[in-house]
Length: 387
Image (cartoon, rainbow, N blue to C red; front, side, top):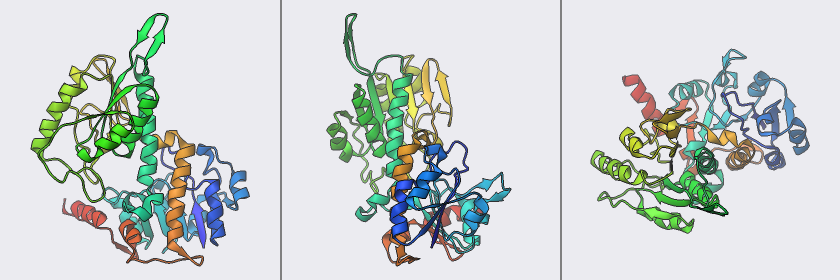
């Protein structure tokens, strides 16, 4: 069985789906691994390293895609402007794709995959069950995102993060607020603490208080009357309009006291919850910093511009996109472990073995045998057709 790792073509993407150290276990399992020339360059992995690990180097994307049984990617397939063809159309019919492929927002790609009879697995759709922890790419990449967000805040803030005792007197530490205590939020808290800031964390889920405090931060608590604030996967549920309005007002009173605010709140399949209004930004001190990690989903802050940094009356608001790509070495290493573990789950005696009774496979499968099988993807396509 031939496994292909193409070079990512998305603008600014420096990660690679498989790093050299992840090749050997696949070769040992009886798989033939092919890597496109230059695929690892953005993450500083050379062709020689891949070859030493047992992979073959293929110069062109066309033959790589066309002869592969399994394609491993980071970003979902897209139009290759150099070849003038979509990556899905380069795949042979019946091949397997494993990549990031958000089922609720990838309608056009999902249609192509189904039409090509591609068996596609989404790394976003890996279920949050114990046996899937090694495949949880959302968490691994969120770790990178949270870490980098704290560095952006520290670099931008016109003051020190840590407390310093100097000959010129004592410099008091920066006060940092992290909104959302998922993987990215907890990593942002941990990194800001390591940098010496005094940190508070907020989340609608009371259950995360212990996790926040275990990192040396303080828990900022808003008591909401709503129940079931956490779904089966452990993610925060969307609040009612009334609760959202109350949360916004309360946060407006809190955020003006902080030097840096990092927002990480996301609700799967929905626009990011609006936590910080433009009026709230106006109340913050000039020189304050906001790093909005939900920018790609519409932003937790009303003035966020995705992919840009804006100055709003002296408050610097970052809307970064694809932060894992800015730390491509470790982001690629973690993603490669995730994706290779999933692939090994699908392989038996060197051949693909699908078991749709298996929760792991069933939950992450998007298209199979010409059909869209994932419920969120089907709902998205149905919504598009009704518009």
